[in-house]
Image (cartoon, rainbow, N blue to C red):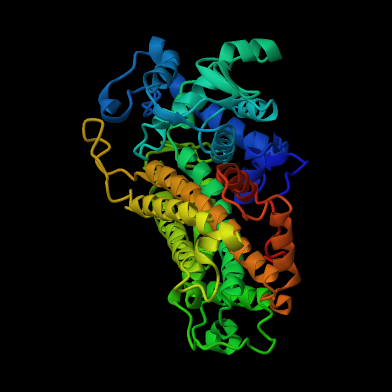
Length: 517
């Protein structure tokens, strides 16, 4: 698992990484760049806006209504109240609530965007987000209600509400009124300045936060599926030569080559090949580097898209305090995250499908090269009444089917909203939520497949059919680590507790699968 950073992550200094967001999500503290240059940049934007207001300049969302109401002039005496109304009328989110880790990631992504220094927000607002992070207070954010442009308006309204002491927050494992938590900790609510409600809410920070978390889970799953494939190959007495270095040199996708190299190392493929009557294994073994390799090869450009969005100013309008310009545009549009998440969820669902096919082989005595049906560990007269992993394989099939169902791209389902002002929207937040769901389902498939593949290897060992010389030290370490927490299935028993335990292990990225990765 990624080790939590003990030092604080600095915002407003240099570009943040996906790992920085994940560190904040998992409990690291945050701080603002304290350089004179950064402080002055923030001050220039605020001062420019204040001067415009005094001169009665027309500023979208400051002296006008929002969206299609941009032609509505706001009376000067009501300008200060406008951001409060923006936060309140967007308080209509529904569905499940983002968990504590996800909500902390949202705090980090929004702070990163605002710390670019072109949103016209004050130091007070930036420091209030730092306060929430460092006190481990997360806004309660319902997942549903965003079309991904003008950004994540409704979910981000819950972040804005927390900063001003309204609605609820997640604190010490409970949902509590923000006012209570602030009073308990001596935190004062801030009052939003005229542009600050819009700056907080008009951006891509919820989808980007989920994308950062999804990326790290996907990165680990690609490695775990490779490790499980190696374990299945050992259990099935598969053919190591399918992963030959010379073979993969002629189709040189780097990620695919990496997966093949990991498999060669796991299987000690440089040793003399096992005797086998089968010239070629079925595709789910033979083509595993090609399936996992697609995900592995996608990761670099997915990282580029996610981190570019993370380190962007994505609200509207942009406040160029240096040149004293208000720039109206559409940076709140979450198309890049939508494309990244639609792509990633498809790749991850293919990992589930790969493992599903491997498990179907592994359980079937007609295809598993001498293993008992359903991997039952029972012997003798008790064997007929034991069914091993039969129901687990059904579960794997169900979870895989659901993952595949969620791969419909969200980005193509744009809706025209808000009096046709928002007439082309990204659906990036829905794409990110779909991706998280596909990851959850695939982690379930992976947990079950890991246990089944190790059951197969252990059956071979108990029957003196295991050649440990064809297993790397790391592969044996993973097997032994799992068996230290999982009892070999000799007699039928409920496996739900075991499955949930190992799903948690996977989500924690508990094992170091490929230390050099």
